[in-house]
Image (tube, rainbow, N blue to C red; front, side):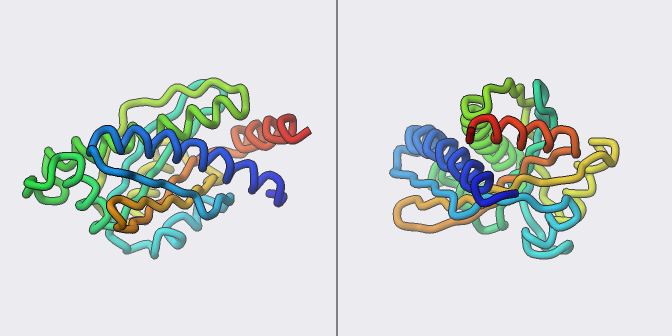
Length: 199
């Protein structure tokens, strides 16, 4: 991407992060700040590397995107971050273990909020229609989760629009990654739409 296109993706991410922060703040009754330090595009093969390595255990929240520009969304969180966020959503007294039905439900709702916020920002920015599916959660190695999504997309994934995301909740800093997985045609449509916006 050009520097202008990177800035455009970062702006989209920051708008989405602002909407997600508001929704999360209302849910947990605490101040939540989300910022996007960087946005960039990488080949799909590099996604596990960016997360921390093929064998890095992570929580992945993923869903399909239909509409004008189809693809897959993957939100990845380190174990500690995922457990903390789930506990905040469930209530501080929760003792649910990572991967339990309660935590899975909470994290899928988190994925629903974040993906919905980012897709709304993307739709407004590009003038395109995006229809997300219901999120699912997996707790596995980074490479295994990415491989699963590539298989579901029929081996047609070429690129990952990557939006780094930082959460701050009650002065505690947390990090995660937001990936929009696309084939070459969908990626071309996004770049064309951003080009029209920048003109």
